[in-house]
Image (cartoon, rainbow, N blue to C red; front, side, top):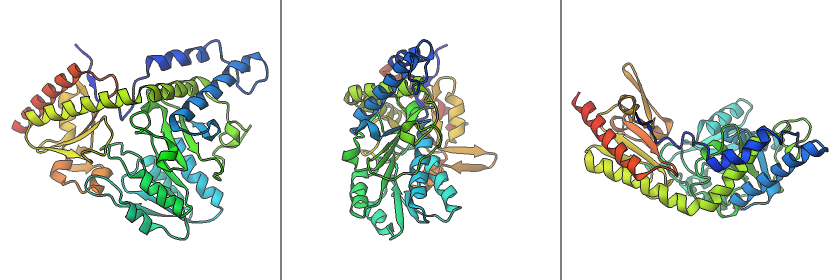
Length: 379
């Protein structure tokens, strides 16, 4: 029996073979502490510097602007908490209603300490209006954080326009780019951001590593205190193998960006077209054009998302935008913010293809999904 077709790359990606090869020596012979002055520390120290340059090249920033973290969640925490703590006062944050919990939960935590947050609405396609963001700015606004691309529906935000407004008001601007890095260009100067978060496991690197870009000159409180690693901003002996992996994944992403973007868009659109041809009662969630090239959020009318996932689970791995429990349906906060009708939202599945997804896998997925939806609608 063939393994299930993996269509959940927004959840996590497999580790690239090139990445696995690059990190392998640092599990074995090159095991030294990069802070050590003897020979065993030299190779790890040089590897860290090389990885920092690889990430910086992908983002178009100086290497010293890159802080390695344990992942996207830590990077988001560092960005928001670091700005708030460096301000040494209360203040006001602006974010959106469709952010990842790694932003929303940090805002809620900071609210316990007197920080106020404005959660901007989005339109029916999941986009923030720059004019809404501009109108939300107050004299005490100390940070704006708007994700680059939504993890559920793939909608891209007008980050450059928001960045220009933030700069005009001298307010630091952060973007959670966990889903966009490696799929579309993420050059920090083009985006106009002061802080940007990366998650390695969305980029064909392992889980447990990420990075935070911090524009040089920006005041940010240190995240972890200790012996002074990462220019003092994140103390603790570095996980060299994982950092090497992130560096190599970033190098590959920069090298293959155009090719991978075109390939993923082709697979995504083949899947959508095949399902639309075989099924009535299908609704696209998110912006039809301004979205990630790999992400397809579809609602199947008259079908509960968890029942559909269960019906295809032996052959396809995907994720739901709604969960059904007994007589209740929990619809994701993203779909709620987009005002998706309940009868559609409860049947929402996110399919996210990857750079290795094949045409044959897409054809097989279309056949399996169409058959499963037909069965469930007739049941």
